[in-house]
Length: 402
Image (cartoon, rainbow, N blue to C red; front, side, top):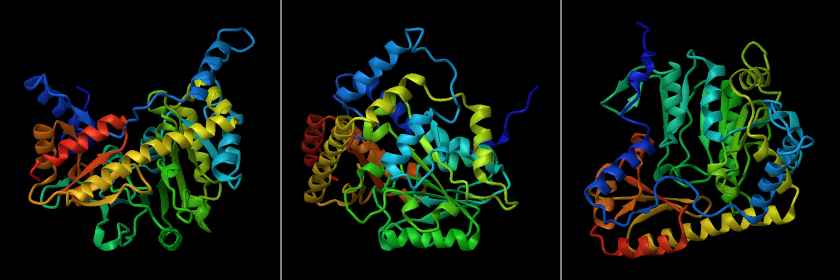
C-alpha cells in the first residue's frame, strides 16, 4: 500500500474555518429556527461593483469571439495586469516582471513553501493566520505537536500581545512570516517596527514572507502598506497581496505575489528564478476572464473609486463593532486600520466563548485559539457583513452576560 504523507497526521483537528462552519451547521441542525449572523470568517458580503461586473461581462463576451478568445496564457500573469499592479499599488517601484499573478494570496502562501523544502526553520507571529503553520507542517518543516504548549516543535512562535503592542521579540529563523494589517489581531506595524524587521532579516540572512492582503484597509497616512516602503526590503522580502477583500474577489479569485530579483538563496540563486519555476510547473495561470476584467478596472478611475468605497463600507462596520464592544466594557484591539476587531473574553477560553456567543446570541465569531496559542482567551469579530446584520449583532451582544 502507498504510505500516507506522515506530516498530515501532525495537523491538529480540522483547518480552522471549516471547523467553525461544521460547528455552525451542527448548531443549526439542532436549532433550525435560529437566525445566524456570521461575523466570523473573513468572507466579503457586498456585491461586486458595477465597474467590475461590466468588465467581467466584457471579458466573458470577448472570449466568445474568434478575435477575443484566449486559451492558456503566461503562468506568471498577463503582462498588462502585472504592469498595472506595479503602477497602481507600488508606484512603479517594483518591476512588472517581479509581479506574479495568482488565484489568491492563500494559495500562494502554500505554494511558496515548495521553494524552501523541509530543511528550514519557520517563524510566525502568534497568533497568526493558520495557513502559515499548517503548510509548513505539511511540507515537513516542523517536529511533532507539543500538547503542553500547544505548539509545533521547530517553529518559532513570536508572541504578539498587547504588552508588546503586537510587535514581537524577533527570533532567528530562515523564513519569517509577518502579516500587517494583522489577521487576526487587526494590529498594524509602524514604519519603525518594519525597519526593525527588515534590519533583523538582513542581519540574520532570513527571508520575510510579508502578507499585505489587507493593505488597502490602512487609513493612517504614515503606516506602510507595503514592506517595500522600507529601505532594504527588496533584498530580503517577498510580498503577498490580494484582490479578495478590497475588491470583493473572494468568489472570483485573484491575487499576486511580488518576488524581487534581489532576494537570493544562500548559494546566490535569485528566489525569483525558483518562484517562476514553481508557478510554471504547478500553476497554469489565473482565469483569463478575471485578469482581463481587472486590467479594465485598474485602468478606470471609477473602478478604483468603487474599490475605496467598498473598503470604507467595511471599515465603517468595523468602527461600529469596535465602538459598541468598547461601550459594553470589552477590551478590544484592531478595527481601525483593519476589518477585524480582536476581543478579550474574561473567564472563558476561546472555544467556550465562541460556543456561548453562538448559542446565546446566534452570532458566529472566530475563536482566537484557532490562530495559535497566543490567541487563547480572545475572539475575532469580522467586519465583512451586511450593515443591518452588524447592527442586529450589536443589539444581541448587549443582551449577553459575558
